Length: 332
Ligand SMILES: Cc1cc2nc3c(=O)[nH]c(=O)nc-3n(C[C@H](O)[C@H](O)[C@H](O)COP(=O)(O)OP(=O)(O)OC[C@H]3O[C@@H](n4cnc5c(N)ncnc54)[C@H](O)[C@@H]3O)c2cc1C
Image 1 (cartoon, rainbow, N blue to C red):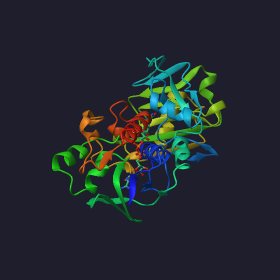
Image 2: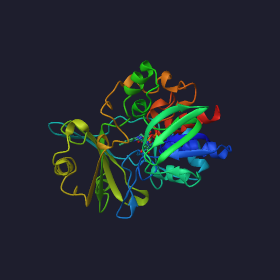
Image 3: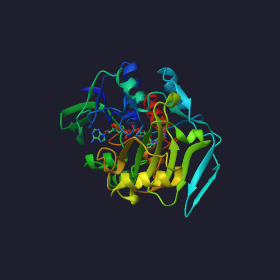
Image 4: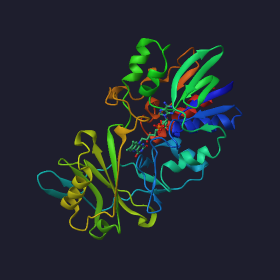
């Protein structure tokens, strides 16, 4: 019997496990995938980590910046100097409105935060998808494909709609509400586009673009420090479909950025095809992000949701995942 089982080794789950470990609790993390990080996913392309999930943190976000400072992980300012491009029937170059809050990138990619936390948490069981959470005497049992784990408390660091079907004892109203919470960015494919050099900077272009023709609705610079690698990325909505997507992406780049816009690598990551991120309900009700009901303990106070969707401060963001995990742990 542990003090706490944490479900999910994404940023919320690992922040909680790290905080609880530091305060001397016995913790077991169970993770469905064969890696940590969840939506923060940065595989190496030509030897460099490329973010296929989150790209930015914002200067207004306190919890993630505090954690980055504690873990000694540096950030750098997102590049968006110069002219943007907008595509509809034709092309228009200019400067789109911007937020006054500076956006930053994490050196080494967003997955570095989860990986650093994971190094300081002893018990992480990968390849252990949770199927059932059930009450037992003085606690809860978490049944996974790699065995079961009992604890006094369970923290669920995964989208609420993925948790609801695991619990037959959940009251129907709560189960219905959890099931309708969309997964943040669960209906997006991120496309990373790696180039030999950041040719857009030579023209005084920011690399930022928007298009009503698609398939990429938005494009931004995502180059690494010192432009290593030189990189743009695009968001493709699920409605654009996957048929011949790489060809359509390449055509769009040529239309919007000219003949130099030939990437050496195109990496497509459709998040709606990831069963440990999304559910068929991922389109749910956007008003439920950060809803107070998601923060109310369930199963006689033994289960709490902590994923980014449940934060009342930065719902959906990395900052929200950290804020919510730390708020729940400090209340214990
Ligand atoms: C394309 C994209 C772009 C984004 N851009 C930004 C951005 O620029 N800035 C920003 O702040 N945020 C951004 N986000 C959101 C950011 O990724 C999330 O806020 C954050 O990663 C969520 O962390 P989490 O721990 O709440 O959930 P997750 O990262 O989803 O972690 C959940 C974990 O639970 C595991 N799991 C799922 N099912 C089971 C099961 N049955 N049993 C056991 N484990 C299970 C999963 O494998 C995963 O590891 C973006 C997300 C995406 C997809």
